[in-house]
Length: 368
Image (cartoon, rainbow, N blue to C red; front, side):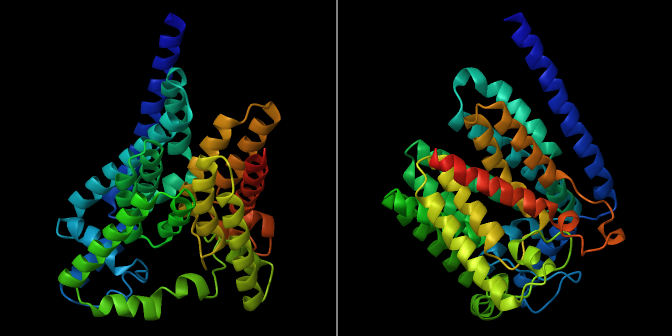
C-alpha cells in the first residue's frame, strides 16, 4: 500500500512537472501574442457581429473554414480583450484534454487502475506533439475532443439525450463530428439522434437570429465543398491521405476516388466492430484523416482515444511495442521541414504513415 502511494506521488509530480513545462512554453507564445488560430476565431467573431462576411475576408492570410454556427461560440470570447481570451481558451483546452483522458480511463478500466492510468496517459497526452501544436496555435481541437469523448461516455451511461446534445454542440463548431451520428443510428439510440437534431436545429436558428442569414448559404455554396474537393497541400503540416497521395504525384481525380474508397471502407469496418469504443473513435478517425482535402498535424489529437483504447485492450508485449512505435511516428516532428526535400515521402509523411499503421492495427483488433 505504501509503495503504491509513493508511486502515485512520483507520477503526480511528473504530471505537474509536465504541465508546468508546457505552460511555461505557452507563456512565451502568450507574450508574443502569437496564437494564430485563436486570432482568426476572435477576428471572425468580430467581423460577423458587425454583419460582415467572414468567408470573404482572409484573416491574417488564413481563411475561416468553420461553419457559421461556430460563430455563436467564438463570439462569447470575441467580445473580450484578446489577452483575457487567450488565458481562458488555454485553460479550457488543457482542462478539456485532462477531462477527456479521465473519461476514457473511467470507461475502459476498473476503479483500481484508473488513477495510475489517468496520470500516465495525461503525461503522454501533454507531451504528444499534436497537443502541443494545438495549444501553441490556440486551436479548438481539444474542446472538440472533450465534447465527442463526453458524448461517448454518456452513451455508455445510458444518458442518451445528453450524449446527443454534446455531439450536436461539437457539430455546430466543426462539421466532421456529425458523422458519429452513424454510430448512434447503428446502436438504435433514437433519443441521442433526436436530441442531436434538436441541438443542431437550435444552433442554426440562433445563428440566423444573430448573424447574417446569407452566411449559411455562402458557407455551403463556396466553402464547405473545399473541405472535400480542393487540391491538397504539399505542406509538411498537412498530414491527410490527400496530401500523402499528392506527394506520390497521384492525379487529383484518382486521389478523390481513393479517399472515398478508403473512407467508406473504414467507416464500414468500424461500424461493424464489436468493440464499441473502437467503433466510435475509429469512425471519427476515418472521417478526419481519410476524407477531407487536408488534415493538419494538430488534428492528430483525435488519435489519443484510439491509442489509449488499444493500449488498455492489448496484453501482448509485442503489440505494446508496436503502439509505442506508432506513437513515435505520430509525435515526432521536423523543426525545420523547409530544410528537407519534400520528395522524401517517409520524412514528410511519417505522421500519416504512423496513423495508417494505427488504422491497420485497429482493424486487426476489431476482428479479434
